[in-house]
Each structure stands twice: as C-alpha cells, then as structure tokens.
Amino acid sequence: MRSRHDSEWSPTWPPRRNATLARITVVVTVQDEPDYMRLAFSAHQPRHGRITVHPTPLAGNGPYLAHDVVRALGKHLPLPDDDHGLPTWATHTNHSWRITAAWILTLGIRHLTICRAHRLSTGQWGQLLALSARTGIHLTLLCNGPLPRQPFHLLDTIEHTLLDDRHAAAAHWRTPTSLPETAGYPWWRHRAPFPPRDDELQFRMPPQPLNPHVCAFTPSSAPPGPIPPLPLPGPHQDHLHPHITHISDRIHTRIAHPAHAACAALAALTGYSSRQIKALHTQPGSGLPPLPAWTTVLMDAARQLAALRGHPDAPNPLSVPRWEHPEIDQALRACHLLPTPPDRRSRKRGTPTSMTAITHTLRGRPTPS
Image (cartoon, rainbow, N blue to C red; front, top):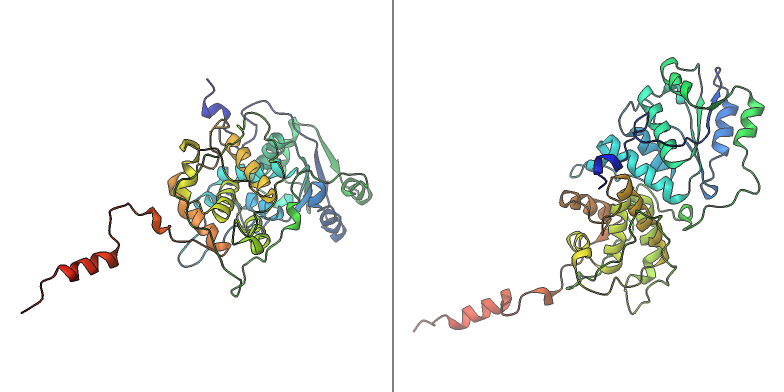
C-alpha cells in the first residue's frame, strides 16, 4: 500500500521521485537592460498558458515567491486586518508551493518566466526547479545581473539553455501565432476588484439545508475529468442568480486556496456550511444539485491539491480540517458573502421557541390576588 510519505510532493530539489524536467532557459543581461524586462512581460499571456512573475523585492525566503506566482495566476490572498491575519497555509512554504502547483496543473500553464532571478536564493531556485519537474512547465529564469554562483550550480546536472543576446531572448519569448488557448474554463476573464471596495454589494448566501446530499467526486488517482457544462440555476432555484457573475468573479480572484475556493462556491450556491461540506462523502443521497460551469476549475484544482498532498483517493477532496473552517469564513468575508442563519425548521420538534416559552411561563405564573 502506498504511504503518504511516498506520494506527498515536496517542493525541494532534487525531487524524491524520478521526474522529467521540462526545458530550462536562463536569460542573462548583466547591465539590466530594460528591453529584456519588456520582452519578458510581453510574454505574459495567461490565455495561452504563459505567465511572467516579478518577485516581491526583498521578500526573502519562505512562501513569498509561491504567493507571487499565485497572484500572477489571478488569485489573491485575503488582506490581513486587525481581527484576522493571513491564513495558516500562507505562512507554510510547502503548502504554498503545493497550492501553486495545483493551479498550474489545473489552468494549463505551460511556460513560467521569473524576472530578477539573480536575486533569488539557492532554496528558491530549487523550489522553481522542483515545480518544473512536477508540473512539466518550461521555466525561464531572467537574471538582470551577474549569474549567482551557488544557485547556478543547480543547473550543472540538468539540461538547460543559456541566452545572453537580445535577439535570441526576443525569439525565445515570442508567442507563436498558432499557440492554442488553454482548455477549460476561461479563468483569466473573471476579474473582481482587489482589494475589495468598501461600497461593494454584499450578498446573502442561501440557508443551510437540513439534509445535504452526497457529492460524487472523481478520484484523483486518474486525471480529473471536466464537469459537464451546466446552466446556471434559475431565479426560482436560487435568489442569487442575478448576481452570480459577481460572486464567481470574487471567488476566482480573492481565494487562492483551491479547496477553500471550491467550498466557498458550494456555500454560495447551496448554503452548505463547512461542517456539512466536510461530511458530504458520508451522507446518503443521490448527489449535489447541478453546479454551474464556473465551478469546474475549482473542483479540479481541489482534486489536484489532494493528489499533491499525498491522498489522491480521498472520497472528498473538499474535506478540509476543522481548524481551517475559520479560514474559509475569512475567504467568504473577503468576497463579501454573508451567511444565512440556519432554517428554523432545523430546531428539534418539541423544543419550544423562546417566545413560546416566555408566553407559557407568563400564562403559568399565578396572578397576585
């Protein structure tokens, strides 16, 4: 039986298991010529599976580079405030890189360019090489200064291409006219303002159902197949229907964790709580109601993340630990989605309401003579 330690992916170099690296290209401009940066950013075309990342200056080691890549994919972490800091996963390096890899695999990213790679640490170079080995992307490292000695030694044992000529770099970054668009959901078209505006409309989610149905997830041991495109729920089924586009934009833009984003989508469409979503695979029933097409990429990314975390055969990839439920609530608040109180019918029969109890008490109280 396969153990989790053997199947869990770690963003370290060299990889634990044999992996086939995609081509690695290093572009060097010792004088930091601005033309190279313009060429690199002209290659940022997410609809063709190509993104360019400018790392946060002076961010140091840790998960920050992974966050920069996630933001280049159109995903954002919630802003910390006085009441809520960053989610726990955002402070963990391995978790952050697994989330980055899950989105890259799901969104069909084929080429990743990292600018100012000469300022990255040896550990960050190793994380990028491990990401390339796991996802198969073509990694391009733009060094806007002299090549660093220690990180560059990582490339001694793998095939790579070194470019130090502007014309060669332009040819490398030129987007082929016949390059197809990435398959699946057009995630790059869904943009919500970030940070959220203070005067933004807030939407109320549906009430929590009394008996959630089971959700039929595809095991991640096989390549996740797309969910068939389904029509949006009609106004008679979901009172949020007139605003569903705004809600989907916010979820795709403001929730970087794939499983949390999928949970938020289910909550917005069905009213399920995090506890109900966690128990979906143990509840009897015939399945969830039809989900709209914009949830497809979220469900697929959650399956990819489950595989990267070492449990691809989990019956419910949205079964997040209980200690992450407050982080899902934080993500819902970032999308300005308000929970609906539980339905009054959920109260146990025979238990009087507060008003009934008060009336009964007043009626049973003897009146003074």
